[in-house]
Image (cartoon, rainbow, N blue to C red; front, side, top):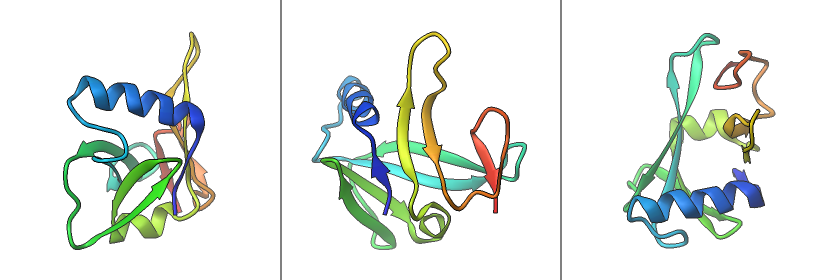
Length: 109
């Protein structure tokens, strides 16, 4: 399961609306892909549909779709949003990551 903080939900609601998606109806697609300075990087997009191979659940009224391979890397992760002058944007607090890069956008196990 992936948790979504209240600040992340607020920002997701705004961004999804701007792109023609509806929070609670459409999906936030979260995944992991090869790349980044630590080996794996996070991927976040919006989607109207989930695939048969996705793990689908709801956290803080946000529908989340994660492909099964990525789910293994993301179990227990909290999606947060850090705004302001020194904000990083969306932040994945992943308890499975053994090493992260300085920017926090990539990790390794």
